[in-house]
Image 1 (cartoon, helix red, strand yellow):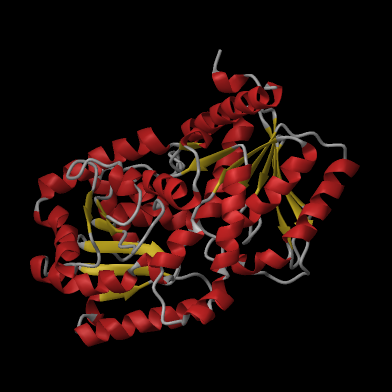
Image 2 (image 1 turned 30 degrees about the horizontal axis):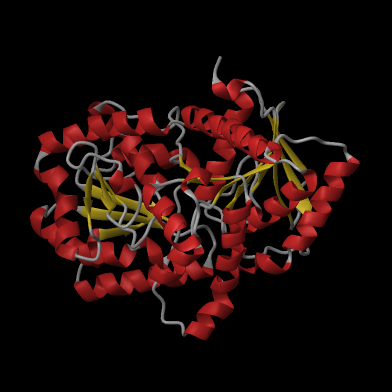
Length: 432
């Protein structure tokens, strides 16, 4: 019988920040890859017969519950008022969340077998709740305060940085969560190394499980159909696609600096840049800076800006592009790259993150350092300059992505970790 088939029937998942819902509004503040990760895992747990409450913050005019299916509900607990709160500002409100959720759990007489928390804010809350309920607590960091502080790059002074991001407080709380919880699930090998080096985490308390992707949505299609998609979305045969929220770490400026090399090698190439969310003044300001950089380089006419791609169109955009680019300064994993690869799009990723450690260079994808424009621009050009290689990257990249990162397989791995952590915890309690 499968290891994950014996227990963990009632799971409490906690993800506090952003807009978490049955149909998440991706692109809104603090609402992106982590929300997708948490929802997809919750859905697969429920498909595997587990009862899951995905708990988040209730604010604005959101309902208390979303019923996703018979086994899965999004449950919103009010705290911190009715307005949106940035994830960096959650410190002052987590105590109220803990109190309100524990009160609701006990008044409803709900029993959970495991608490599975995501990001430091939910981890801090989840640890306190797990200690009070005397249940297992497993945590996924998603990103690390130490890493972000060291690599984000900013013109702010140290005092302004701390006032804006509160890194010292975040890192202190992260450390306590990682030390006190029953198990940490890291998403990449570099993240696991940082957890050991900077947070003193024991190997025995950690397992690496990569994120998953929805293999039913992200899949390749025939070349003949790709031409129809290019016509539908006004894309061309040599277009490079990049997409994501507007953030310094995403390295869009580095990508733009690499474009002159790409255009020299592939004169027909363009960049399709779907950068930013919907109705965000901050994103608009960031894109304006990128456009200014393109003007200075004399390449503005070769860039097509598309602010936001709706979820329903995302797989087809991946399929219609000749190459997908992920040029991040740092990237804990890079789910967009896995989605693009799964759609059969030749992909160039960053060396500053976890994914490049897993791929076979030249077979599954290409990678380069986006801080070296000549190098990165050349990698973008290669799949178009050598179509046979591009075709191999398309086929082998899709096989790699779908076999290794489908959500059901990831969910089974995590259920097995819950069980193993339960047995380890029980053994500790029984020791004299």
